[in-house]
Length: 478
View 1 (cartoon, rainbow, N blue to C red):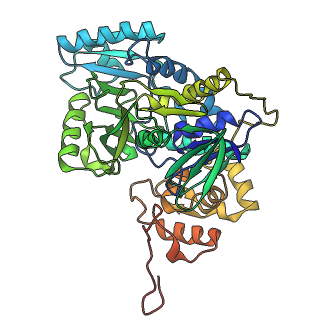
View 2: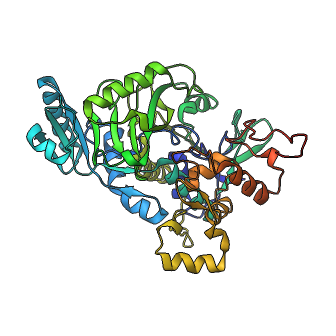
View 3: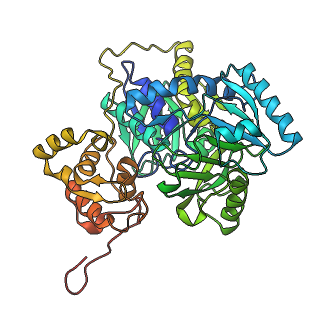
C-alpha cells in the first residue's frame, strides 16, 4: 500500500514523484515500458522556453514562466547539463514582423523578462549564419537548452534515492476505487494507493477513462528531427525558431547541450499513439525549412533522425485537474511541457495540500545528485586518481563520445538502473556519436550482461524483443 502512485515515468511523472518524496510519503512510479523517459521525454526539442508563446492567463503561460525560472537551479541540483543560450524567433516578411511584436507583448504580459525586437542588421551580428531571407527576429534572453531524458533519469533516480519505488513493464489495465483506496492493476500485478497522479503522456486520456473521466482526449502530434555531428554544433549559438502557427512553435535549428546541432520538429496530427516512424517527406520538408532559417547546414553530416510524439490535448491548455477525490490528471502536456515540468510538480503538490491531504516535510530528503557525466569533466589529475583505484575508467568503450567502461558500469548500478543498450546510451552517451554504436555496442552488451548476470543473448537494444544477439555460430562465436 502506497500513499501515492504516479502513472508514467516521463519528465513530468519523474519530477512529480521527486516532489512528493520531499514529504513523509510512500511513492510508487509505474511505467508501461522497460525504462524511464521512453515517451515524449525521449524525443523532443530539448528547449527551455522563455514563455512568450502561450496565451496569457493559461496554465501553459503560468507554468512555462515559472518552470523556466526554476530550471537552472533544478539542473544544478540534479547534475544535469543546462545552458542559457537564448532564443531567436525569425521573421521573413511584414506579416511575421507583426506576429513577433504580438509575441513580445504577450510575453511581457506573461512576465517574461529580456524580450526585444531586432532587425536584420543587428541580427547578423548576433548570428552570422542566419538565413538570407530573414528580415527580423524576436530575441529572448532567458531561452535555454537542456537534455530532457537526462533530466528525467536524474529526477526519477533522485526520487528513488529518497525512497520512491519504480515498477517498469507495468502497463495499467484497470483502476478500481474501493472506498479510500485505489487498486491499480497491470496484467500481472496490482498496487494499492491512497491517491493516483496520471502523468501518462499520450495515453493520459486512456488512463483517465479508467476512473470514468472522459472530459478530454489526447491526440499524438508527430514531430520528426535530424541530429547533426558535433562538428556542426557551432553553426548557431541561439535556438532559432520560425514564427509559430496553430500547429506549434515551428521548426527550430539549435545547438544541443552536448554539442550537436538539432533540426526539427515537423508537426503532423496522427491517430496511432505508437507511430514514431520517420518519413522521406517529413525529413525533406524539415531540411527545407531549416535551411531557410540558417544557411550553411551540412545535411551530409546528419548522424541520426528520429520522431517524437507530443500529447496534444483537446482543450488547448494543460489539463491539470482532479475529476474525483484522490485522482489528479496531468494531461495534454505538450510544448512547453518540458520547461513547465518543475512547476507542474509544485502545482500538483499545492493541489494536494488544498484538498486537505496531510503532507509532512521529509527532513531526510536529499535533492542533490552526482552527474553521471562527472568523470569526463574532471581535470586529468583527478581522472588519474580514479583510474588508479579503478582501471575500468581507463578503458574507453565509446570512442566517439569518450565514454569509459567505468562510467558505463557506474550507470548500470545507479538508480534508475538501465536494462538495455539504449538505456545505457541515454545515461552515458555511449553510441550517440558519429558511428552510432558501430564500435562500442558489443562491449556494452558484454558489460550489461555481466552486471545483470544474464547471457548476452538476453540483452536487448530497447527492451521487449529487440534482441541484439540471437545465438552462437557453429564455431561458438556470438
